[in-house]
Image 1 (tube, helix red, strand yellow):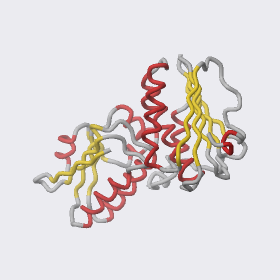
Image 2: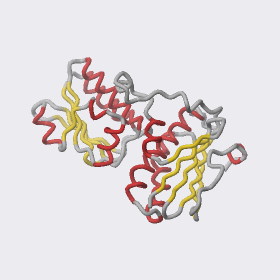
Image 3: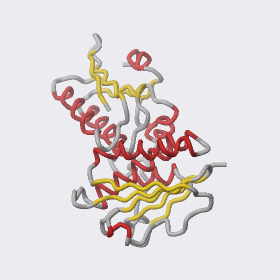
Length: 153
Length: 111
């Protein structure tokens, strides 16, 4: 993890309870590595988490979206920049934080991609999907670190 | 992800996606279909029987292809969505935009 990432204000500033294990990785700003990074995280979580579908589907898609956003928009594909992933997990809760080295964005300004005119647009579904697939989403104030939390009984 | 492309005797170009359709590989699918469209093909079936998940970039490519194919007077159908993929299409309301069949066989009879 590079200093620039670890020093940033993080989205997951307070850890939820019951998160016994931690997984960290640093991902280059290259979209071709997204699938491998997602599989690596999912493989670790599938055995530990109570519900497999949540990991197989909700987590994989949400993490792929967050990584793609961080690489394409946050770091703007700049190969000198990295994306940090920090996963804290227990049997019933997974907390995934994805942080980039970009200037952040205003996450409150995204239109609903399911409105009839928006459905024909090729872009604008990433953050919407994340919000639909995880139980809680937080950002840091800068908007370059997202915290996604999944909970299952 | 790998793609296999075949042309049915009826003229339908069937592209089977094996693996995830996501940000790192979506252009491959887009280019394959656009090449066929350029070459004169008009009927397309994309089969997801062997696909685990699709991300928003992959969905975006499907939306973009659908529009391009329709603009050329063609027809795009999708098949083989597992429960996760069906959920994705429902969440994004893209199930209202695409003709979706359970199996490639069903889709081929619908052209």
